[in-house]
Image (cartoon, rainbow, N blue to C red; front, side, top):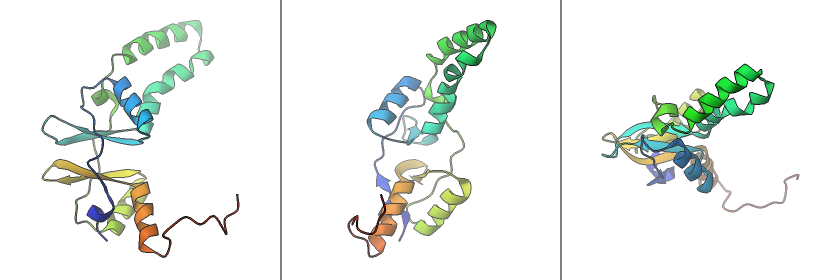
Length: 155
C-alpha cells in the first residue's frame, strides 16, 4: 500500500499570517492535532500542531508560581501573545512524504521522528496529510478487521 491510498485528501490548512487564535479555534472545532500551513500559492511552509499551541499557551499556566514581578512580566508577555500569528509558533522544518511512498516507510519515519503526521506534497504543493490515525485505519483495513467488535476487549 502507498501513502495516496491511506492519506487524508484536501486537509484543512491555515495561512502563516493567520492569528494564533484562529488556528486554535479551527483545531478545536475540527478536532485536529496537525494543521498544515500553506502560503497563497498552496506551497507548504510549515505545520502547527497541538504541541506548538500548548507551548505558546503554557506561560499563563505557571503564573501562580511566580513572584509579583514575574507575574507582571508574564502579563506583558500575555498581551503580546494575543498578537501572535501562526508563523510565530509553527514548526518550520517539516518532514514530508509523497503520494507513491510506501505506507510502511512513511509510518517508520513517523515512528522514528516521533511525529504524528506527514504532509503529502507533489511539486511542492500540499495534496494531503498522513496521520497516525490514517496509518492505523489502513492497517485495520488491510487485515482481517473490518469492523470494531468489542468482544475480547477488557474495559
